[in-house]
Image 1 (cartoon, rainbow, N blue to C red):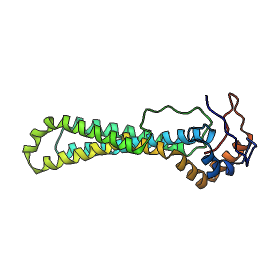
Image 2: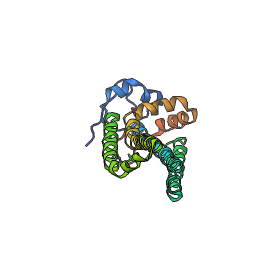
Image 3: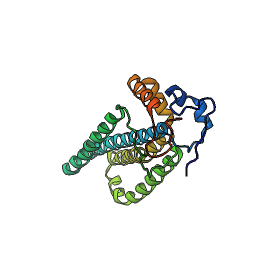
Image 4: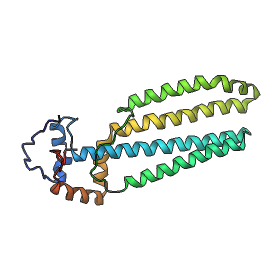
Length: 215
């Protein structure tokens, strides 16, 4: 059961947006205390992390397609990697467009991504090593075919690092800093700020006692 906290200098739950995004109320409430603004920040962080993950993975797919093409690989493999990259790029663009909209009040999105950037980096490094060691016996015969294939091997590993970093480290980073990024977004987007100001003075939780803030 979540505990409710009182903010002595502003007893009215329909407080202004400036009050809720100020550092004072946020410092008084525990990090885990729920609020509408914190839920919005978390959900936005999830979308942003997923968009960056898809974008990074797309760049990795395009890079792999180019690398296979330069090494005179199968055209079918080139097309497959390029196609996957294009799909991921379209998903990233769709997610990015949602970030420009005024967020709706909705339940908190679930996530299995690490909650800290350091954990995401560790997971990315772990999978990079596992995949690198696992694939080395497959690609090692190619290293005897000349300098181009040796350079290609190291380029492929860099693309693997980009993919794992995008998939694990980027979502963790945006999850950890979701509230900070949302506060900056409010300050930079007048339309978003006006919409949240209207919500802050009319908000009433129909299903419980969740306050609008703090952030």
